[in-house]
Length: 279
Image (tube, rainbow, N blue to C red; front, side):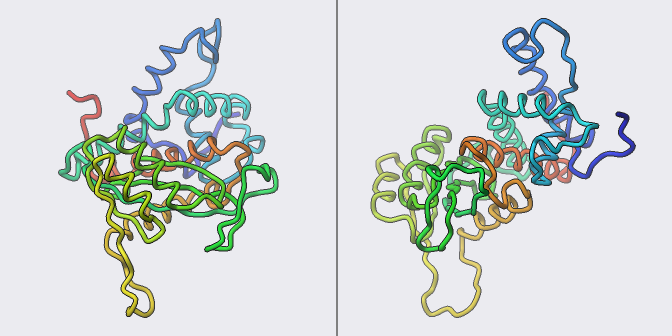
């Protein structure tokens, strides 16, 4: 079917240029190992990514993909392969470094902010993977994230909503310390207690709990913590993330970097032209 006009979630030429080298290199390395075995690639990588972004942005089931995309089985197959092989995390890291450099910062961060958000689940999510967040009164799953000072994603962990922020913070700190060794400072809310703080100290990360002024009435922006709260707001603009529809939690874990890949491309294009090939 010939497409009459693009969808709002489609990649622009400038945004595609940022991520095309990574996806093309992945396909070249994977030839003969799974998808497109024994024949030339049938589907354009740009259209595959457009399909994934369409699902992420609109929240539709994979089977409901419009017919002017590749078959839903193909789009889902590429999504699963890119999730398993870390392609979304690779793209997120590449674009995050470009954004930081474009804003005059070091490519690798030295500080981070931690937080967690509980989201309701749909009926297809196994009960064994869910829980109840006693504080927020939400039954579902919890996304634990760590972001840099710009609110850009560094690490994500998906659990039952009953898992404490403290336990999530310990996991995030280990992940962040391993992947981003320059980080020596972390800010968090009061859900992160002694165990997380002590674990950070053992990793060489000073975890500071930023508290709300108890005398303050009404809404007030809390220093440092507002950065990660804004990040959750960005994620909620993607309907597939506003509620958890994923049978397996690692699918949800991959959709969050996908949302950032979409947003960071736009941010880079707005900042101005970049030499994405390092020349």
